[in-house]
Length: 224
Image 1 (tube, one colour):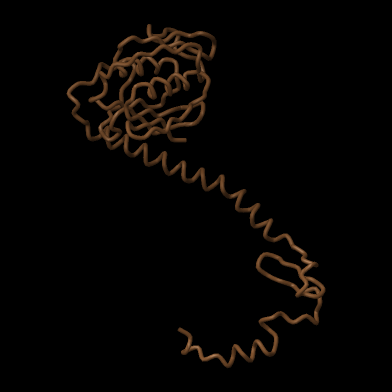
Image 2 (image 1 turned 180 degrees about the vertical axis):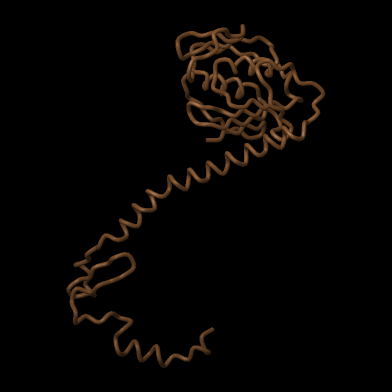
């Protein structure tokens, strides 16, 4: 599933997930555990890059990609007793920055903040980004990850649609018997687009002699 948040258009993915595996034993000051699978996040005017780096210790984030231009964007976060996924969603939504989160309900997630084409991969131990200069190999990697994730999502949607299409075909294959049509003595049975008349002596309108003769006498060239 994809979640994209732009300043002019909001589409927030409500992530729901528990802490995967065993988390790192020590958490940054901005992040504390409230229970085995829930956390608190407290930040007052801190750079979003710092807050998200701290989240790497407690959330199954596969890749954290940050645009250097928004690394120092200050955020205020006061979140209590939530899952790591809910915390990531709220931090990004409240930042009013463009972002993209890719992954399932419980992760692992790939997080892009700012311009995804200029985003650089960071780790919990890396220093703050400066200068806003994009690194081409990393940008190419980020774009490739997005394209691969889009392809996987399309394939997943196609797989999800197969049972629906199968059910529709099976429904169409079920015979429908019509017995109360006053113009069709004996009634008829429909299977998909095929029609079987129950009275073998009944002649459908288009096959009646006068209708056939009229159709054959029609000058096709004169039809506007």
